[in-house]
Image (cartoon, rainbow, N blue to C red; front, top):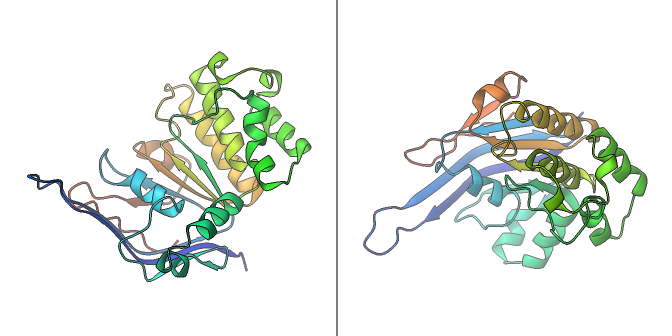
Length: 235
């Protein structure tokens, strides 16, 4: 049986309204199960909570309530209850790769060093795998360049390579094609889906582009714009 990477039940995140404002915010996930090699699209309009949910799944925010949260067999919910930030940071470093919509590259590092940074932090450098990623993303001739010397599309491909460089079990992509043009967005999405599948990672893509995901048969979960509730059933 294909191993379960992520299992979430009864997640709720609430943000109180600012003073003299009724702009409160809440999102919830009743149940979400994702296995190795599976992909899931999180869709909905801007402001519905897609990025917030990505942060929660990346262990960058703590939920207001959680019944169950397991990542690669580790009980994250228990760590949250005792506020063990260091353990959560360690799990994120080992098992999660994140693709930000802005790329999020380190400007002072070359393309190649950006891809290697997560490996170096873990002390598990695999030059051959990093070079293979660069080649598969048509970046092998750009390895010595700095991010400022790249196009937007090239920077986003570097961000994808960096996210899977340490072979994480879970890849989270927050609007990875939002800054790309109509010609480059499908290519970048195909590369992301392909690399995640080939490396055996579970993948969640938050995107406003429903058609891009539907055309690739990616199962979808919708984020409601009014309440912010996310109805995510098991996959």
